[in-house]
Image (cartoon, rainbow, N blue to C red; front, side, top):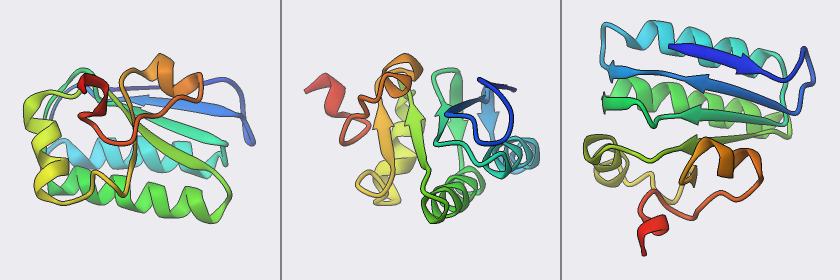
Length: 123
């Protein structure tokens, strides 16, 4: 798991890039990285899920919290893909595809072009 930014507090963009399975055991590290990114008050946090093969409700909780905190501070969270079928399914069965902002890639998210849902890039 890695985290990258374009600067310090008040930066425009921060990238969090988890890898592999985001389950109960690995969720704490993901939550800490996302929390650290949000605390820096960026305009945009990109959660690049392109290398995530599995995510569970603990990851979803982390994303909900980050979305809420960023929105309250005038920032935004974008989940970037491409998403694996299992991760895409998590957003679908939890009915959160209309709640979060999605982009087909981290580059597209950074360029300001989030898609409406995790499946809209293929339509």
